[in-house]
Picture (cartoon, rainbow over the protein chains, first blue to last red):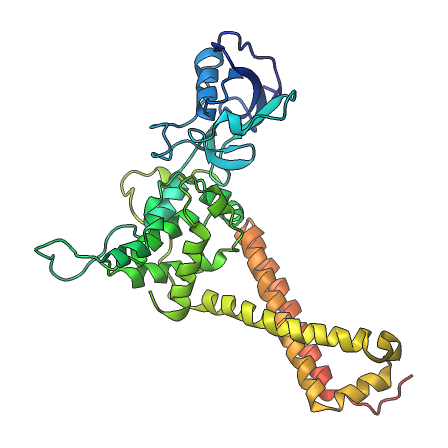
Length: 258
Length: 141
């Protein structure tokens, strides 16, 4: 089948509540059983300014084309399932409001939605996350402690907890890793998300596995491949200072100090 | 990127697919080298451009005698030698990183790097040789 862009879709079934405006949602569609490569399709759908992009996708899926595939779970910005490229920027579809994407008065609004880059697209907006999780597992993102288990809890001061507070917020949505140009070009780079999750344990005073993790990140595919482009920090839906975390790991390696 | 067969294997789903860390500090040192050589090159190259192109009539006064005069002083010999080595290693390392990023196949990566290393070696050896064995008494014509 040849990829035909902009075939007219009947979107009249979608309920249009009072106050809604018509926006064009351009989705990069890909069906591996039919298409050789992804192609754009446009849907003119009614949208309230308070709608999230996820609502628009659901309206298209429920009323126009049930084969539209995307991930979502909680739909409230916590599970990290629906990271996608919205208007060229990696965002969670459940956290982007239509009112922030509306064009100037009198102009037609177009919202482009594409799958995140750097991971193999399986169908439409749905990507294979396995390479991403493989890099995550490789940095040992769990507490490593030697010696006897304490009979009480492992005590930590507020200042020690504060040290890695920022990187505990990660929800593993892959928005940062799939916005990283080094990751696009070479998938064997650990990527920002894995480094953020290593940072969370490297700087934890209760953890004793910092050396192991720093050794892993000191390798050819580790933190030294970071080019400090700040794409990851811009992309993070949780507001984590990702590039800063990567720099802190570099500094720990450079000065042998955690 | 495609789904590799091992990504689908179920017998050992959690076995590491990456080679163990090599425990080498090469990437760390090359990262530090890029920062330090970059700083030095700012001084060396801008100084070189200033002397060659702006000072005392600039490029119009450069001839064989001018170069011969400069290279009779160990200071300018050291300056040029330092500039040659730092620029070659800095640029070479930068290109190595770019090749690592953008070469898709291992064989492409290997041959591009070989080409790069050979070119670097030739320029370094030739440049060093000229700076140290330069003979101002050969006929200028």
